[in-house]
Each structure stands twice: as C-alpha cells, then as structure tokens.
Amino acid sequence: MSDTDKVVRFADMRKFENKGNVLIIDVREPKEIAETGKIGGSINIPLANLENALKTLTDDEFNEKYGKPKPALDFPLIFSCKMGGRACKAMDIAIQLGFKNAKYYKGSWTEWEQKLKEN
Image 1 (cartoon, helix red, strand yellow):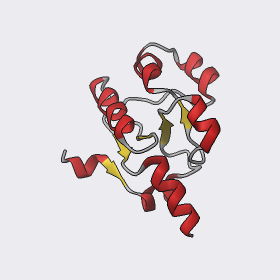
Image 2: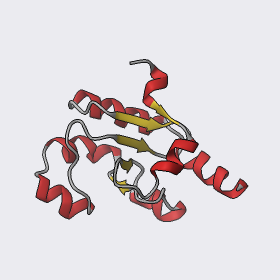
Image 3: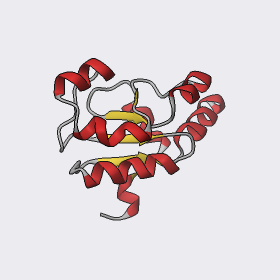
Image 4: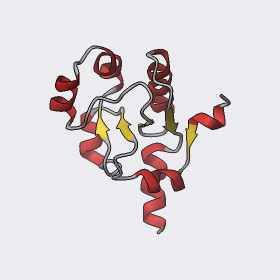
C-alpha cells in the first residue's frame, strides 16, 4: 500500500462525518478537544492510550468507555489530531496491531476548522 492509500483528504472526511461505516478517532488530549471541538461522530482516544484501547479493552469495556463498538480488525479507521503527525503515528500503531483498514486525515483539525470557515 502506498502512502497516498493511507491518507484521507477533507472531501472524504465530509462524507464520513457522523456516519457509522467508519470510525474516526481523534488522538489529541481531551483538553485540546475541549478548546477547539472535534470532527462530528469522532471519538477521543489520546495517542498514549490508543494501543491499550485497541488491544486490551474488551468489546464491552470499549463500548462503555467510548460509546461506540470496538472495531473489528477489518473495520475502517481514520485517525485525526491537530495537524496530522500524531494521527499518522496512531495509524502505524493500529496497523501493527492488525487493523487492515487504518488511515489518517493528514490535514486533521487544523485543515478541518479552516475549510469549514471557508464554506
């Protein structure tokens, strides 16, 4: 898979926002999200907690903690953060854990907020 296959763009994110066919995971710290907001339908799992959440939590624990079903290894995941760096790291962690459809939103919150203001 090439790097471009792993990157999600703004137009695609608009299609995925608030849909159940993909899980958007914001890996910023809760304080950052409280200050800025988040992409609709996304859940927050800080990068430091990601491996534990995806690997160790049971299905019930994940659902209780994050309000969404724990994704299967073939379920599409999209990671976002502030500018894309942490999201890319999160994608790499997910791929190492066996998640086959992990991608990241390169523009992340910075681009999201800017594009929404433009429209």
